[in-house]
Length: 295
Ligand SMILES: Cc1cc2nc3c(=O)[nH]c(=O)nc-3n(C[C@H](O)[C@H](O)[C@H](O)COP(=O)(O)OP(=O)(O)OC[C@H]3O[C@@H](n4cnc5c(N)ncnc54)[C@H](O)[C@@H]3O)c2cc1C
Image (cartoon, rainbow, N blue to C red; front, side, top):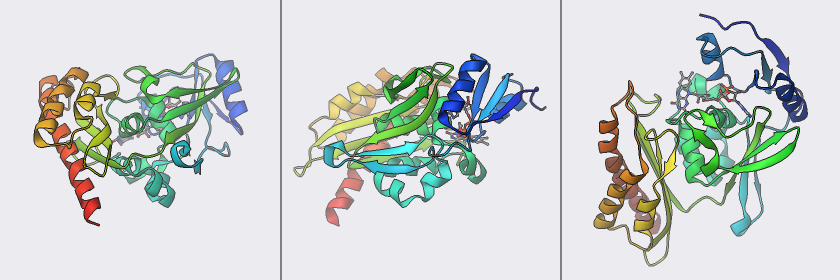
């Protein structure tokens, strides 16, 4: 099947793109990597008045660092492709968790075209990028003809596939604070590169006395959007991530989930696996820390 007719515009600037979005009043979408949008149009899950191609808009695909110390931030343009993140030495040093998670997305062809901004707006609850951005406490910069605003990742979704954007808004950049000292990622997929059954991303800081703080536990695929397991994180504050701490925190993650049943897994199976993968990720966090100590 092929897409129904639509008009095509190639925007030359953010201002032109958002003016067009406004003119079409919800009947147009931006075209970034096209890896979700084009299949949806081809399957006729969507019919649009127009596509607004933003691939030629300059300045939307860079990775930059600004500020220092606690004020340090890494800015990633919305049109930055997964493959650019994978290959960037700057991304590897500033956003290692994001880069590790990018490698789990689809296949080489998808990663050559798909963009960070496109993935966030698409809002698939099993996608890797929304989970990475949530755990890393990123903020999303959006522009429209009415001006710009920033949205914290924790407030970026109303629900499944539902980003908190107005029809005339465009994501221009994602801004990350200083990367946490330690991180780990655990994902269950039926085959490498598939959308996940569930995923867990954890970050944390460890003091010289071995006590952990600011542990964040993010869960993907077990709710209608990625979520933070806040009660579990609170349980770990000030602990040394001993086996009992990890086991009790993993059990508390059940409070944060409301898993779906779909073709990949039942809700019961997902609920059973969440603590297993959280334990695994937290153990990985500890062992990475011990390995760093030995160096
Ligand atoms: C075979 C296959 C396997 C895949 N596997 C995975 C996987 O394992 N994990 C995963 O996470 N994803 C996977 N994907 C989806 C992929 O990550 C998509 O690339 C991503 O969801 C959308 O990014 P895009 O740049 O292609 O956006 P597009 O498809 O161009 O756009 C998606 C949506 O976002 C909107 N949009 C795009 N950019 C902006 C912007 N700057 N501002 C406002 N709105 C914007 C579009 O209008 C559209 O509504 C897979 C896709 C395919 C085809």
